[in-house]
Image (tube, rainbow, N blue to C red; front, side, top):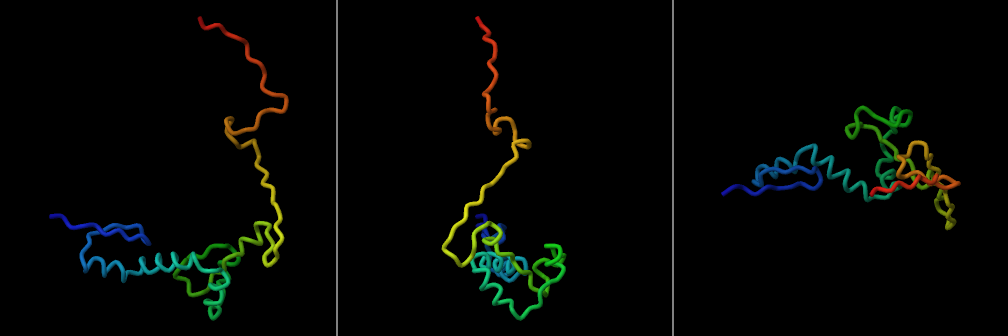
Length: 128
């Protein structure tokens, strides 16, 4: 009888479901990182910043937005507040609308808006 497969939702991996294989996977560094990233995605950015308050900020990440060490970096990688960049002031009850301007030059013909004067009339062709 073939062994069942175990699927890890954090890592999106599948392997044979034996106690030793599952233990080896759950104690692995890659699984621990994926699990931490999963749970950190639900935390408030201010809470994450408070947890990492003792760490120094990675200057390379601040300057370039990228760090070659990634999750292994010993410094803190701050996350920008997306609400402030989206045009919504934080801490106030006001909402501002931000219009998105999309250039129709790069759109395929089927998604472009119709011309202001309408489409030109095509000649009638009798097929039969």
